[in-house]
Structure formats: structure tokens, C-alpha cells
Amino acid sequence: MTADTFPKTPVSLLGLGAMGTALARAWLAAGHPLTVWNRTPARAEALVAEGAEAADSAAGAVAASDLVVVCLLDDDAVAAALDGVDLAGKDLVDLTTTTPERARARAAWAEERGARLLDGGIMAVPPMVGVPEAGGFVFYSGSPEVFEARREVLAVPAGARYVGEDPGFAALHDIALLSAMYGMFAGVAHAFALIRREDIDPVAFAPLLGEWIPAMAGPAVRQTAERLKSGDLTTGVVSHLAMQVAGTPTFLATAEGQGVSTELLRPYFDLMRRRLDIGSGEEDLTGVVDLLLR
Ligand code: FVH
Image 1 (cartoon, rainbow, N blue to C red):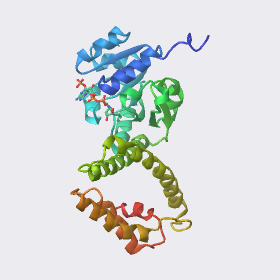
Image 2: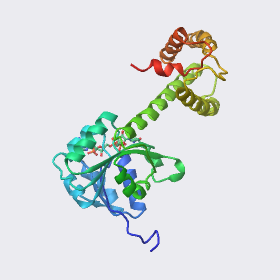
Image 3: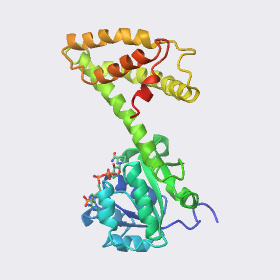
Image 4: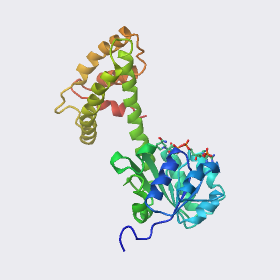
């Protein structure tokens, strides 16, 4: 039997929004028998034409396969869709974005109903799904048995990365990476605002920014992790905290001069100043991390 003729795992998928539809197409393209359900049934029509079975209820979709994937707007939608549905014996994979606390509660809820839960955090946008070279992936946490048993089918839409038995860890990794992304988006917005009123072509400016961010981010992420682990915030520092804090008035003055709000910059600069007040000017910026802990 070759990989092409090996029996494919049946999948039931609840939720046919932008992400659910992309997931569905990836599993259909890989030849997995797919049963779909969506609150608004019309969204299933195109997928039925492509080979999916449409269930007329969430319970019907769940009954159709041992592997049930849920990708809905939020955890309230998951609760609404699965209310009263018999989950006994099912492997439930919840790809809905949620908090670590709610993922843990959902795992306990599933266990009470006789199901094993694997929570997932999708690190991709819909056009990246089913396109391995796009680099998208999904964090998974929760039942290691479900991950091992379902790894192959879960890896069809995007790379599958297991981050631990704690069902909250996939959501935590997801939100941590997305939080860093929003910090990056904030910096990009401020940079474009600075040049906005000048005779500078934003399209010509973009590659400068696009090369600068990864050049700085890679080493900064690695060094921050190493310093957090070792507790050594000063050895080998090339851009000292004291120097960086001394430079902050220049950034604020430039923003003011360009008629740009400093509201995105100030909170971070305030943290740098607070760290300098209680730490050492010879540190790098790692000390800011623990200032955020409450
Ligand atoms: N799209 C993206 O870029 C991101 C990428 C990273 C991961 N997210 C998360 O994926 C979840 C689903 O996102 P989505 O893009 O598919 O979202 P929508 O297109 O808005 O579709 C929402 C689906 O949820 C259904 N739904 C909403 N409320 C309920 C409810 N009370 N009961 C049952 N279903 C519900 C909705 O159904 P309908 O409106 O078509 O009837 C859609 O199927 C999400 O957690 C992202 O954070 C996507």
C-alpha cells in the first residue's frame, strides 16, 4: 500500500469561516473524507461541490468521525455549537483562538464528556493553509496520545508543533507570538507616521523597514532568551540601557517635530527608564521583561 492508497482518516470539521474553509480545502485536497457543519449552512455549499459531506447539525457532524476539529470565532461559539452534543469517545481538536484558562477549562469540559482534547493555536492566515512553503504552523497542546495518533492528518493544513501536555500551552504560545506581532505592527505604524507628511515614497521606504526589523529581531529575541535563562543582563552588551534611555528624548522630539503622537513609544520608553532607575546602565533591555510581571 502506498501513501496515496493508504486509507485516509475521516475528519469532521465544525466552522466554515475563512479559516475553517481553508482547513477544509486542505483536507479535501489530501483525500481525507470530510464532514462539515456550519451555523450558516450556505457556507458549506462550495465545499460539498468539492467533495465534502455536509451535516445538518453539529451533532451530526460529530457523529460522523472519531476526529472532530472545531474552528469557530471564539470559545463562546464552541460552547454554543457543542452544547448537548455527544462527544463520548471523540478526539476533539479545538483550533479556535482562546485564552490559556479557557483552553484548560475546555479540556476539563471535554474529559467530563468522555472526549480527549487537543487545543491548537493557528500561526497562519487562511492563504497560508495547505501551502507548506508559506511556513504556517499550528501549536498543539493537551492530550499527547491524541497528538501522536493524529499527527499526520493534523499536519496536512500546516506544520504541527506540540508544546506540552498542559492544554493551555498552545493558546499561550499563540498569544505570545501574536502579542509580539502587534508590538511589531505598532512600530511599523509609528515609522510610517514619521515619514507620512514628507516627500518620501512609502513604497520605497518599505524595504528599508522590511530588512531592518528581521535584522534586529533575530538577535534580540535570542539574546533576551539567553539572558533571562542565565540571569546575566550585562556581559557582552553592546547597546547599553543608559545609552538607549539617553536617546529616547531624540525619538520623542522627532515625533513631536513630525506632528506624530508619541502614544505608541512612551509606554516602552517609560519601562526602559524604570529599569534604569532600579537596575544598571550596563544592562541591555532584558530587564524590562520582569517589570511587566505583576
Ligand atoms: N482568519 C485569520 O486570519 C485568523 C488566523 C489565525 C487563527 N484565527 C482564528 O481562527 C478562528 C476562526 O477564524 P475565521 O477566520 O474562520 O473567522 P470567521 O471567518 O469570522 O468565521 C467564524 C466562524 O465561527 C462561526 N460562529 C460564530 N459564532 C458562532 C456561534 N455562536 N455558534 C456557531 N458558530 C459560530 C461562524 O459561523 P457563521 O457566522 O458562518 O454562521 C463561522 O463559521 C478564530 O478563533 C480566529 O481567531 C483566524
